[in-house]
Length: 144
Image (cartoon, rainbow, N blue to C red; front, side, top):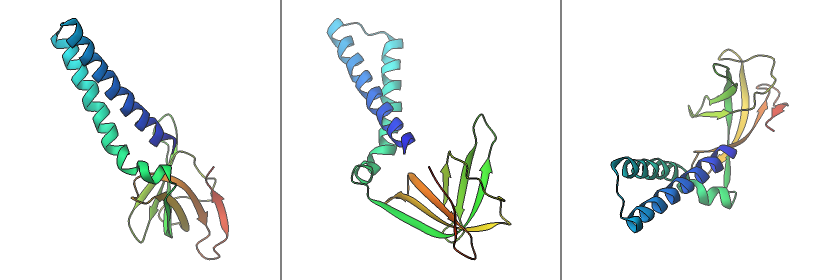
């Protein structure tokens, strides 16, 4: 959820910075190719961030979440400076990524679990997860 708000804030700030720079260039009547290119770059990147985050803003503000539940596979990816976990729902083939890695006995395709993943209504941003034992439905771990 933090990543959502970081992208939204960066998008807003980049668009505002681009518009401000365009206004300052117009007032000063100083148009250099480097500054105009930078402004268009800020505007483009900010627009992409806003395009990705604004459709889900309503769901985040009003906390309109849904829980996707079913059998799942938990995979840990530690191929960078930090680790993250991918929860793949076997029924729907959706993959949800979280930064906090749960402490489970085993990971991978040969160890299925039952998961409940809370996401926005449009399934674009993950909120939290709960992992249960596949047979007994006993809660094993929940996200922070």
